[in-house]
Image 1: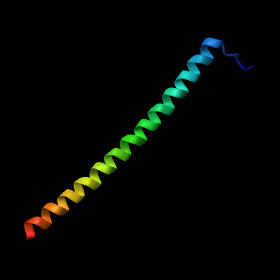
Image 2 (image 1 turned 180 degrees about the vertical axis):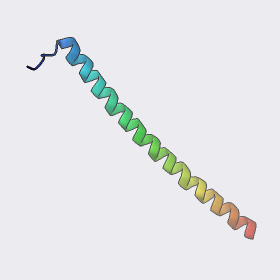
Image 3 (image 1 turned 90 degrees about the vertical axis):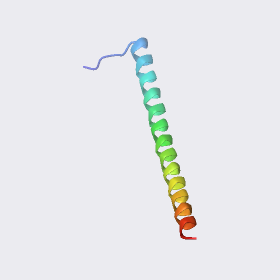
Image 4 (image 1 turned 90 degrees about the horizontal axis):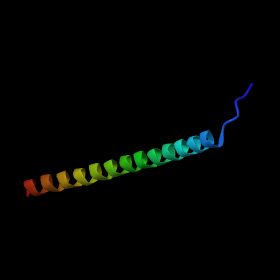
Amino acid sequence: MTKKLTDREKKIDDLQAEESIIESRSTHQGFRDASRRNRIEEEVNALEEASRRD
């Protein structure tokens, strides 16, 4: 026997699903930002090392 959800329960489920999507997107953006920071840091380190050699 399946339980019918009330309108309130449906709204809560919808909001939780939206929250999950937002978290997923922000986590993905966080990974992209971290990756970008790492690339920039590697470039800066390479430039610093090259300037030390000169």
